[in-house]
Length: 172
Image (tube, rainbow, N blue to C red):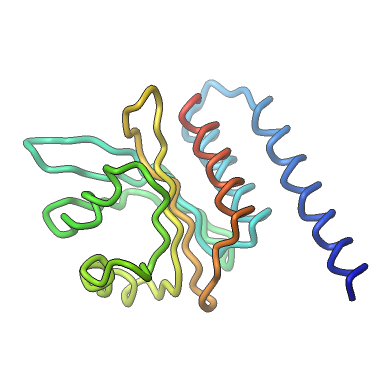
């Protein structure tokens, strides 16, 4: 069993390495294509049901996350044109502004869980990992990983890989 676990871990690391190598060499003049490629490969490598990239902006003192692309692994499809606003989710935006990884539902923030409960119910989200996309200290958006097939414990390797993906998006 130890050998099988070791072999599985090695294959997983190899897939992540190959994906990161591919993405660092990705060149395209079409930003939407690049975003779709990044989220497709992230969902496939991490085996997450939904991966999205959301861009951050402030309009008339309202913070907005606009979906640049959302890939759904179970249906092999893309979605976009979704928005998330601080009007409805102020606690979430406050937590995101601290530029730390958010693991949801949160074991430490009941208010945040309560605020997001309807969102989780509508989209059947069992667990979520949100990684801020930051460039030169400015919040550009968020890489959102959503698991719908059951609760997922977000491992340190998931968080590191996701952070690297967020950094690649920031550079793009």
